[in-house]
Amino acid sequence: GGGQRGGGTKVAAGLVLGAGACYCVYRLTRSRRAGPGAGTEGAASARHGSGPAGGFHSSQWSNLDAHHLQKLLHLLEFTDDPLIQEQALVTLSNSAAFSVNQDIIRKLDGLSVVGKMLSNSIPKVKEKALNALNNLSMNVKNQGEIKVSTKRGLERKLT
Image 1 (cartoon, rainbow, N blue to C red):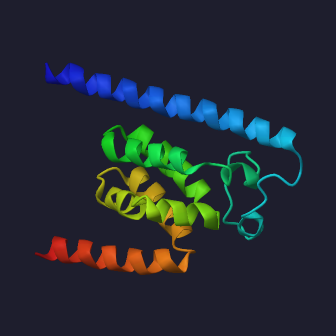
Image 2: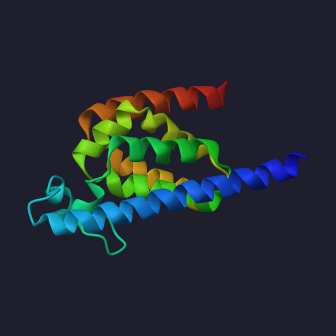
């Protein structure tokens, strides 16, 4: 019954994440062929140390479309697998090093999705959520929303 359903959810989440990763790699290799001017927004963030890690060039994370970010947020919201949560948060954190993605993530209600991960019992998931929120907080509009949602979260914990 229920145990099998949870396993199926993990498999589905893994497949979605894998498919998304494959598509991102495809997009990244395609953008490299497009030339040196492709996807350079966010280069200043990368120069100041807030850019993505893991061997990817800074412009690659700025090429994620809104629907990719939406899928990552849905995956983060609906999976209980801490490894998938960590990977989704790392990807969101890297993409949030670019102002265009900071705006998209905010408009997709991503601040609250990432913020909810702070109450996760797994320390590594909390750490990755804090990293993502740190990158997202480089945006003034995001700072205001993070402040409000943090205050609400604290009020809920105290009542």
